[in-house]
Image 1 (cartoon, rainbow, N blue to C red):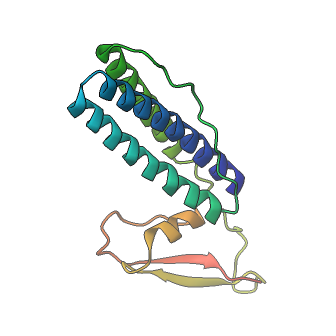
Image 2: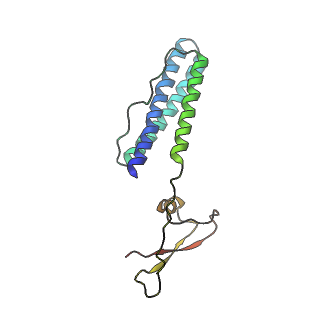
Image 3: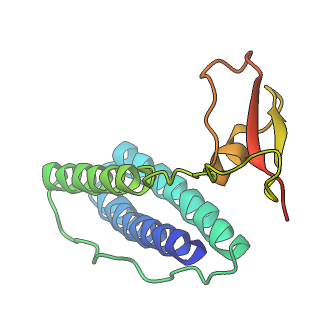
Length: 163
């Protein structure tokens, strides 16, 4: 599972690196053509993308992976302003689509407990209390439990005790 997450993060990082190159090239070209305000905006966007790429790299390193250093696309040079903006919109739209695809939840596996759990069974059950103070992401990542949408509810759940 960790490798799949690292691969998704690296794909996102590679996309961010391509965006950085594209925005910086646009910044230089616009600056040379005396479009200072637009050039400054492109530089600001490139810096935002750099921060995104760095955050992705930090997460990849945290997961014991190696951050990607190669952009996933070649930057386009010599574009007219309208073509630049069209390219930028396409880059951002593709990134949004990629993030949305990566963010789709995996199919949940239902945990089935043995039907033969009786008083005489060697499998014992234990009540686990998940309160509104339990971090939801930890509980969700277990993939075993669901609870009411309202965090104000407390829910008692049953799970097998560790053997």
